[in-house]
Image 1: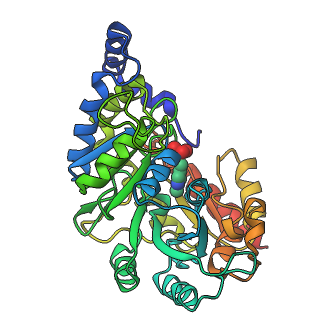
Image 2: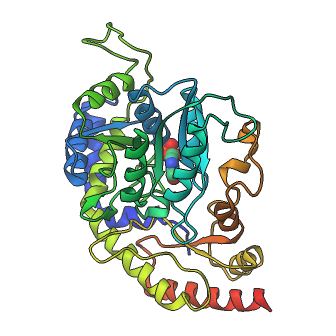
Image 3: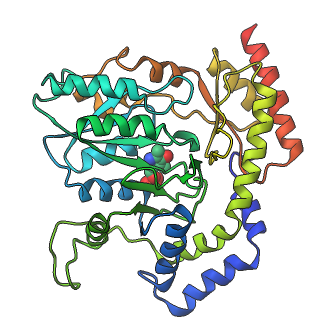
Length: 384
Ligand SMILES: *Cc1c(COP(=O)(O)O)cnc(C)c1O
């Protein structure tokens, strides 16, 4: 059994994948080939935004979004502490300071009430942690749709409006998800996603995209993607990046988009089986409301004695992963900011208790059954 199974997916893709890749080998436009524009149109339609700009990774997508908003030194951007490191790293890369926010104990997404408290603290002029300078200007909020479940954007938007901030959606784990009829990637003014191979929609290398309905921000991000280009290649109007997506990656994604909705449905089936069978013995994820969709980038549960449980599962041949063992406010890279244990208690508790089970779409019924039985057994043994 594999935690993700890209080999099985390749078999399901069949000839279509090779044809798409061969087309690129034929025309040799490896950068900015025609597949990029085709993919951008399809992704924009899928997500329901007028603009999609493909780029080199999810991390670069976040940086592009921050650069479009003109974020820089002296600015504070609020980010959940329980996420992949890139969410906060992007803030630092543009010279701004991340202010960490605690998460909800059931969804592990950003906690709007805690967000509001931290913004009130910032407004009073007090640094959010002892290592930070005074007088940071809050500019925006990054939400993360953790494990594929959309954050509570209604609650976050209400706080953002109250303080006059923008929201940037980190949809790296939630491509394909939907909340209240809106797709992930369309839940904030700008959204960033990732096509890293293990994400719900993955390419065969690094890739990402930003989405927006704002024509001006779209134009800035297109320029940032290619060295701050202006009206032509040798007109440079701003400091930018080399953040283009390779044409071969676009070809892979075009082939994978054809089977993506089927894959999402299979992930949902597996998640429902897990939740039905495992909720008596571990904390299972909040399921999407009727009509909503979770992308199930991860199926993550929580229990006491997590480390002993994980060890037993690995011993039983069930691949598991721990996302994330350390919340960002306690990571070495952010130690200078001056956060301590106790500053974000819900995230700290999650980091001690969570682990993720295989939920890829090529897991068959027997494998799902094997995972369920192994978890029930491992939790029982770890407890006794
Ligand atoms: C994967 C991920 C990223 C970064 O994406 P890359 O394509 O690996 O750069 C950013 N944020 C979150 C929440 C992620 O899971």
